[in-house]
Length: 223
Ligand code: C5P
Image (cartoon, rainbow, N blue to C red; front, side, top):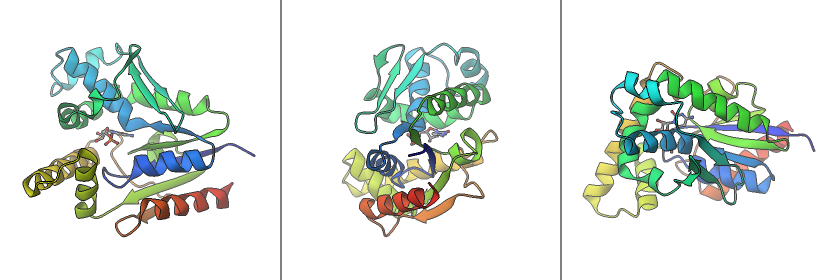
């Protein structure tokens, strides 16, 4: 069986991670969560007192942290300088700061190079999920998927993930999510965008199993 590279992009709350892990597991491919890498960079900036709203300060030190990702879809890992940061990178502080850090061109150049190296080292193929995988990181990917969903569905999923139930908190979660997507879509370097040759899948009315089935079918058709 030949190797296949699958790019899955889209805004937050569309089920990218769950879908990508399930597809990679089904097809025995590697898995890379590129958002986790930008979160790891952001976590390191905050931990080291770098002003994340000062792009020059971020650019000056962004080659210092050693970020590494394990690509097993059943147990993905993310470390900074050897320390497991899979928990801390999901904090609200990191989530609130990540769009500013990921908009810095030097950060994107470094992390994009890392992503390409990881994909190249995965001989059996890989599913890479993010915002700019089909457009910038791996423009020659065999299959490109762009996941979308209504803002309501995305906020509901993110709230469930965070175990947020109160109406006011769901509303705040939705606001934070829309704000992050707007920032990610309007930055000048490599914004969140659908590649011209990506297949758009609206997941609003679909279950995770249905989305996975749809993506697996698209991959098998192109292999
Ligand atoms: O996917 P996740 O929500 O964890 O991504 C966190 C943030 O990382 C995004 O909001 C975006 O700012 C950044 N990101 C990016 N490019 C990617 C993946 C994530 O800029 N390919």
